[in-house]
Amino acid sequence: MPPTLAEQISSVPDAPGVYLWKGADGEVLYVGKAKSLKKRMRQYTSGHDEREKIPLMMEQVASYDYVVTGTEVDSLILEANMIRQYRPPYNVDYRDDKSFPFIALTLDDPFPAIKYTREKHRPGTRYFGPYTDARAARQTIETVRRIVPICRATCPEWKRVSRKGGAAVGRACFDQHVGLGAGPCVGAITPEEYAKNVTRIIGFLSGKNADMERDLERQMREAAEDLDFEAAARFRNRLGAVNAIHERQRVVSSRPLDMDVIGICREETIAGVHVLAVRQGRVLRANEIVLDKGLDVPLGELSEGFLLRYYTDAAEVPKEVVLRDIPEGSELIAQWLSARRGPTRQDPPCENPMARQDPPRRGSKVSVVCPQRGEKKDLLEMAEQNAKHTLVRFKMRTRYDEERLNAALLQLESALSLPAPPLRIECYDISTLHGRHSVGSMAVFTNGRPDAKAYRRFRVRLDSAEANDVAMMAEVLRRRFAPEKAQDTRFATRPGLVIVDGGKPQLSAAVAALADCGVADIPVSGIAKRDEEIWVTWGDAPVVLPVGSPSLYLVKRIRDEAHRFAIEYHRRLRGKAMTASVLDEIPGVGPKRKKAVLKEFGSVKRLRQASAEEIAVVPGIPLEVAEEIVAVLHQVD
Image (cartoon, rainbow, N blue to C red; front, side, top):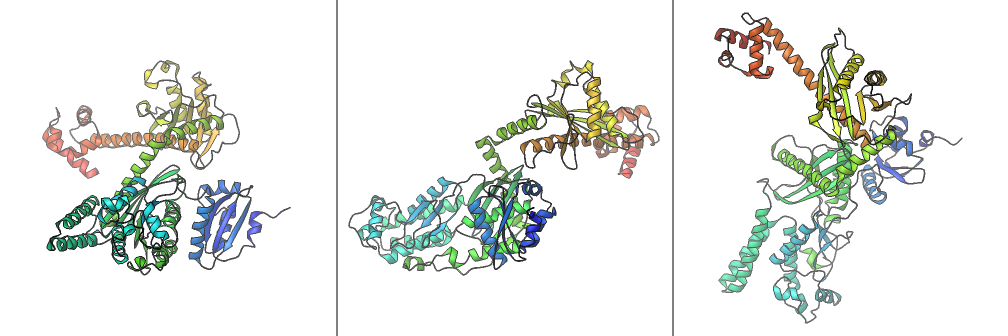
């Protein structure tokens, strides 16, 4: 008999590294890192990992692999690369498998050119981005060229100059005629002057607009002093373009902050991410990304997965990363990001003097923080608000909700052996406190969506000294499906599925109640809160819907709606009962006056907020009695 996975893991070394769980066909299901491979992998096979997805994943695991690394930081880098390579279904990844555009400067060329690209990062090229909006990236390039003339990498004449090692070809390109190109093709600019232009563009794309503004103002003044008014006008127009960009960039701090603010909004199995790139205290750009995981993974795991994916591709790393939930092992992530800020990533080595105009920065420490107050917290909340809109736009563009709801209804039809997809689902819940103020609720979902107008609540009539959920559930269902209610428009059409909150006892009571009402053909199921199991009438064992499936989310959502609706009604009845009992004890307040007061104010909350003069307006309530009511209610509060 072959050894089990648990037995095989005994030979795994107690060392840092990366592990890969694989399916029966060799597909990589999950990639993870660990300080100790043996201890971490044992958590999976022993059932000590509490994440919801792990039991389902381990059912599919047939083998594993691992790679030992020298340090934990090495394991983090290798994990990011392997996730990018294998795209495992249980790791966090982008919803859309597409590359994002960058703006690049070809620093290794004799006269560096600017270009829009989605290419992998090459040595000798400086990248800026990513930009999730391709149009914004192209517009930025055009704006930059209006401010500082520079060649395009797609220009045929520039390509000829590059092939000749920087020598002029004697023929001017179109961009040189209209002022967008610097003119190395005809020798109109020296390598030294061109290098200064490249330096200005690098600073501008890095968010240092103020340096370019000062430079352009100086050149404009010098041209005016030399009576070269045509050149002064060109510099003035370029300065105006810089100022226009400056105005569009929102100022978020008086301090020169250098950080990425990451807002995340999760829904079911997707999440929207909004990244505010803040440079020099201004929002340089905002990136929107949709992830393929959401509430089905912990927020810390989602954050870590996003950081690995995003900054593996990002051309620049800020001094600070701000987000809501700091993932476990954030120190390792900070070390990795700090290394990526170093000269090996930010400034690729090259011999071109153009590159030496912008000396490589020393690697500086990167912090991963969650602010508790101040402007950074405000920025984080703004990013999270925008992340919600990212999801809204994605779902409208892809019809995500419609497809997911259709899948949920079809899955329920199959899993519960229903005669048709349940287009109308009714869910019932009971709320009681030791048998007092007991209520029932009916939440209704039509075509997979809440139908709040169809919600109903029931005040349970059963007189019981103890809570008896089973009997109360039977009473509510008998009242809902009583034959005389068949024509009641308040209850609309027959449901395609009835769900009761509870296990097999509640399900049995529901089946008996429907049979008594002559509607035994309506499918009924019960949902147990503990393990999210679906009890059915045609089997002794519950149905377990797959973790993360649309059907499970739909069932849990309608169950939670029924519970919320019942709790609200129960609390309201308790509040009224408490106030009514207190009013009974106030001298001068009899049944008639109590009824008049409660009728006038409508709710307990409004009565508590009323003054004695406002209560005295009620017919039959003298001012002294009103003052006594206020005093007693405040004393009770």
